[in-house]
Length: 370
Image (cartoon, rainbow, N blue to C red; front, side):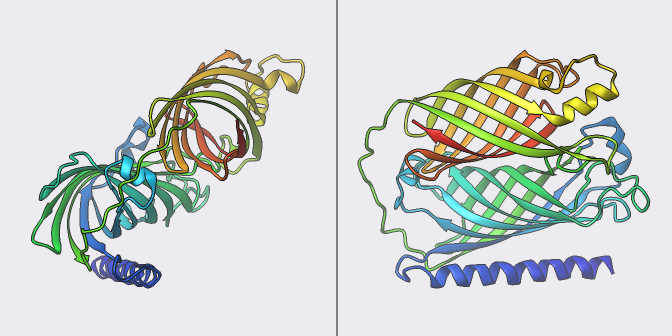
C-alpha cells in the first residue's frame, strides 16, 4: 500500500508540473519558449537538531521532485548581472519514514539556480535557492499526536538550498546531481515549532523543450544611488509554550542606512525597536518584576547584507539588544527573508526574526525608501 501511495504522489506531481508547463508555455512567444522539465529522486535523513527529536528518526527519507525550469536570457537587468541564471518552480514530496507521528511532506516553491562557473561548458556547477509552502500531513495534537514535537501546523514554509551539477547529455537532455538541505517550519505562528531539517542527495534527468540559445540581451547597467535609507513597519503573530495557548501580536519598527557596493550587493546598519507582547506573558510566568507593559520595548542595533535580484532583495541581518528587560532569548537577534520594491519608494517586507535556532515571529510589513 505504501509503495502505491508513493507512486500516486509522483503521478499527481507530474500532472501538476505538466499543467503548469503548458500554461506558462502558451503565454510566451513560441520562438523564445525554451524550458526544461526535470524529474529527480532524493535520499536523505531527518536531522535531529535537538536531542528531544532523536526518537522521531525512524529511517532514511526518500523523496521525489519535479521541476519546471526556464533559462533566463537577460530581458531583465538582474539576469545579466548574475550570469543568466535559471528560474523555476519545484514540486517536492517526501516520505518522512514515521507515518504515525510525522506523516508526509508535500510542497511547492519557486527557485533560482545560479551558475557558479560562467563559461559555456557541458558541465555547470550551481547554487540553487528557493522558498515556498509545504503541507505536512501530521502535526502536534494533545490527544491524537502528542509525540509530534517538531511541527504544530499542517501548513508551513519550505526552504531549499542546494549545490548541484548539471551535465549535458546532448542538445536536449541533461543529468542533474546535487546535495542540499530542505527546511520546513511555521515561524512560531503555532507551537511546537522545532522544524524539520532534511539533508538529501539527489539525482535526476531533465529534458529541454524548444531549445533556443541564440538570443541574449546585453545592456549597459545604469548607475544607481549608492546611499539610501528606509523605514520599515511590520507586525506578526506568535504562540508560546505550552501548545494550544493564546497568540500574541508582535511589532517591529526598523530604520536602515544602506550602501550599495555594486548592482548585486548592499551593506548597511540600522536600529530596530521591538514590542513583542508574548514577552509580557513570559515575564509574568517567570515572575520577572516590571512596572508596566511599556517595559517590554526592546531596542537593538544591527548590521546587514542584502542580495538584490531586480526588484526582489534577500536581506540577512544580525544585531544585538542595546536595551531589553526580557533576556530569556539572549541578547543577539537575526533576520532573514524577502523584500520587494513595489515602486521607487514603497517596499513590501516578509522576514523572519530569530534568536539563533529559535524562530520568534514572521514580520509582515511595508517600508518607505528615500
